[in-house]
Length: 142
Image (cartoon, rainbow, N blue to C red; front, side, top):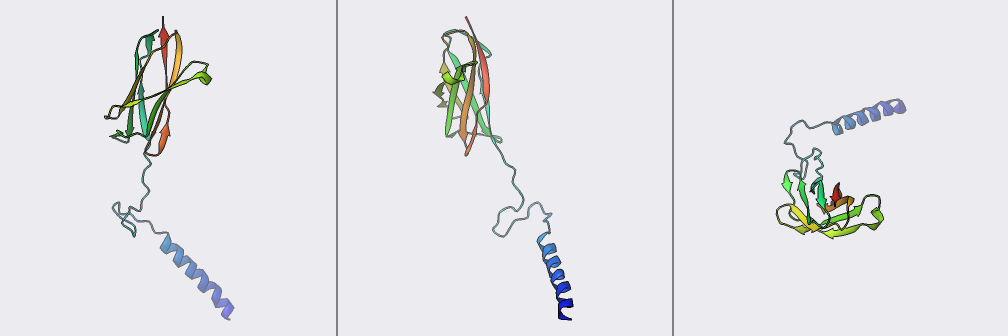
């Protein structure tokens, strides 16, 4: 007799506990026990707007500019911004140029190209414990 009653009682307790633990909070401003929001926070990534001219002449000074943002916020304290440059098809022989922090969310450097061709570049950017490396290209003409 005890065995017949034990199973339904245990099953009922499990269902009750599962129901209590599965309740969702519908109040948008609800907080957990420690005052933190109990909802999942949206992951925000850093973004880099990497600007270079489409074309330039051999030995002309070219300005490389990366604008770093985190959501709507300009990032003025990126850990690293480095420009990696190589001639198209020859990435093994790339060069790296460290960018200057302009203090306004932009990071820049200047370079010249000593021959005509298509050159590709990454703006290696590390900020807010994230890394991104947008790629652009420039055509250098005689």
